[in-house]
Length: 226
Length: 297
Image (cartoon, rainbow over all chains, first blue to last red):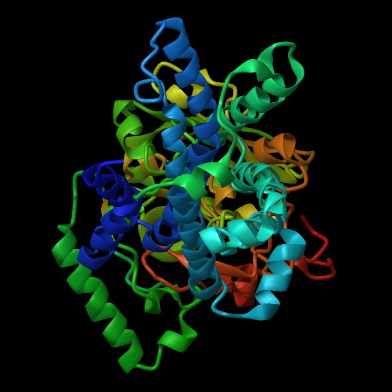
């Protein structure tokens, strides 16, 4: 992938943090700065989590389009598999924002009071869902390096299956924290249902698995240039 | 003792905010100097810095327009609250319907700086202008059967866009016991910061019950009805586990959606502890004498 593409892609991932940072610096976070500071990173963690889950369906779609147009340009035009390389930065961005979200909650909201945390977990189901989500993302972030991929071999893929329950936990967190009448979270729920539903469809529908795609991460990464 | 009882505030008699702020500062300093702050009857909110006009008018829970607090101010500009009449009805000897201007002329609004604590976990300090609800009720002469007061908001989907969706059963209703309604802290607010009530804050007439969660402080009231039985009110019908009739601010009792032990004073970057009865325990605890306030939802 040309350097400028990955550079601008990485810039895109940190852009929300930069914008909120500038607004915090200039004191233009709006009427409730505390709420905004805690919520923005949480929102972007969810967005990038869903983006990372969209990579596989996009690859499949790319291959289908290429076949439909009878593009036999070898692996140049039709090779959407390249976008799999976006998945690691997306996953790490998701984790980075989730970590920021948790850190701001623990310091600004809880005031580093462990008793308050216990109370919140006991009384607020959405806090439990959020913490669960973070615990699921943590091992994925840790094992995101090439070295861990090689070390875990086939188990790496098994471990990273945890991104699906993490997605479900993230949305439970969002839905449960929202007050009655707020419909925003359900748009994200629909996206997650579509992304997970696609995987089930590919697995269970006759012919669905025949989309020719190269195998996931491991071979791709070990061959990988860059 | 009422701090700073102004002579007459009519909608036509608006104090510029700068003058008003200077006056507040002067009063606050004066009160502190006299050592009178500790004796202030309104739970010491007088000594806390009020939230700004911008904060108070840009962060509004008003489902009649939208569940999005930041969207309400723009959507509410469509409401033209004149003319506006409110009826006092039900178990009263002298039912009547008052025009809002008539109400303001007849019952001189006073200034009250109160804390407002929302069940969502945020709070503000707001300088209201309003009349004690007791003044209005006393004039209407409640009968011996009047044990509860029910309040009804405007129902008008043409002007209140949020009412076109069945988010809540419209119109919004609220209620108090007669003792709560007659309490001197209970205010029918007609404005804030010396200006007529902004649409997004519940123009032209709203309730303010500072020791209860904000949803009790019903906005844009069109009817006040005295009743014999506990009225069914909006939020307990929608989500009985999360919202009760009494809804006294109580940091010890977690409601279904969470603990209420701390709050986000809008504008502050750290949460602070929530106070029992929102800090008005000295004034209102006797209303619930003999009752277990931790069980009284």
